[in-house]
Image 1: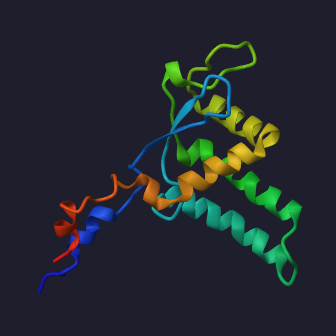
Image 2 (image 1 turned 90 degrees about the vertical axis):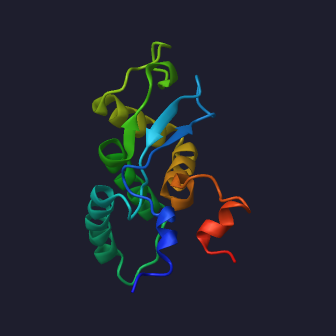
Length: 153
């Protein structure tokens, strides 16, 4: 017997799904191609769980504080260049110290993420939140007409 809800497979997201995220707060409004920062991105999620386990052991019985939140952010500073950032186009690249756009390399992506988290942690956290939400990686919301494909009767 087939699964009567197999139509929901359209909602699945995996690490091959990409979104472009524009950092409007930054000079030149760079746009970064990103994979999901969540369970659907196995390499990212596995590495994050390993890092988080160490933090959880240290926190046993204690409340999280500002230091804990900074440490949590530091995990993504390490993981984003390797597992979340897919790249950027030269004409949408972040602006470097010389006022020019910086072509994509994983090393420059790491420098960009480190600098963003250090100098504009609120902007970095907003980006982290966006790429951690699965809905942002799905196709546009289904229309009423599309609803029939999702099981509407």
